[in-house]
Length: 71
Image (cartoon, rainbow, N blue to C red; front, side, top):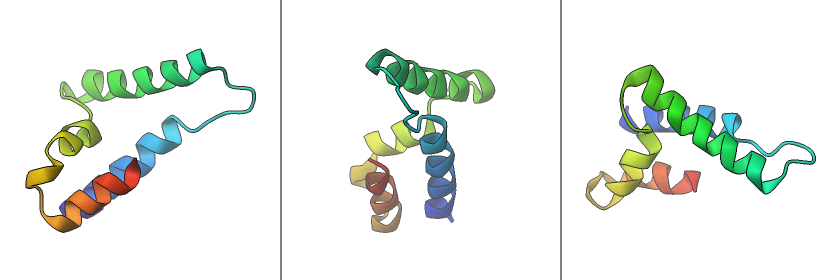
């Protein structure tokens, strides 16, 4: 179940930061910053993918694989 939640969160995150036509580097950085900030503002917590990525070494193999596949 944790892997499914991570997958769904990751899919939404990647959709939010997807490259857009004629996007400049500054725009891409801004999209990532906005996505991370939205998670913090909405939930009062860090981005799930960031937290799980930092802890990938102690997660179950299934969950760690899902997180690593996002990046």
